[in-house]
Image (cartoon, rainbow, N blue to C red; front, side, top):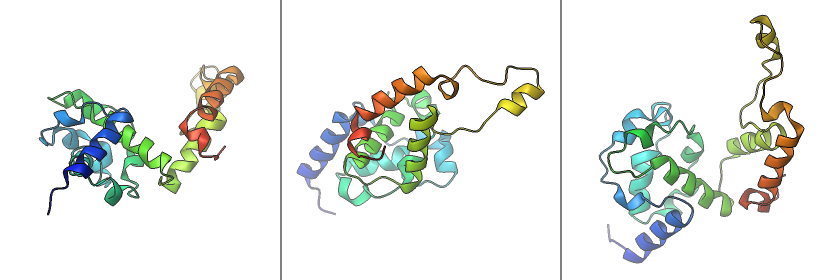
Length: 167
């Protein structure tokens, strides 16, 4: 493989620009991958593998891989990283890059629509279970707070996701 420093610089600069500032701290130790539920679920391009591809300048080669949308934002990778890479931020920076290039997983559209409509990327109605265990049927979340939902919609409409015209 021929190392193309310009491609590497472009990839790193792109990811840093989207919020993955500490990507260059990565030493490929694999600690992040060892605790990642997404990797355990079979998403191959998360944590160490994603960072390796990015550090090799392979933005275009991986742009259509949907693995980044499998990240559940549990932050375990960031907690265990010995070099403060903050792998979750790198994954989210890559998602922003994918979204801006209109190369995001169709499975992510459902979660984005849910977030826009209910204030939660994943939402199920908990009212029956809450009533059964003696809690108020509605939760103090954006799903039941119209003002909070409007604020979330305003943020989405005026950010990069709003520019995509999905909402």
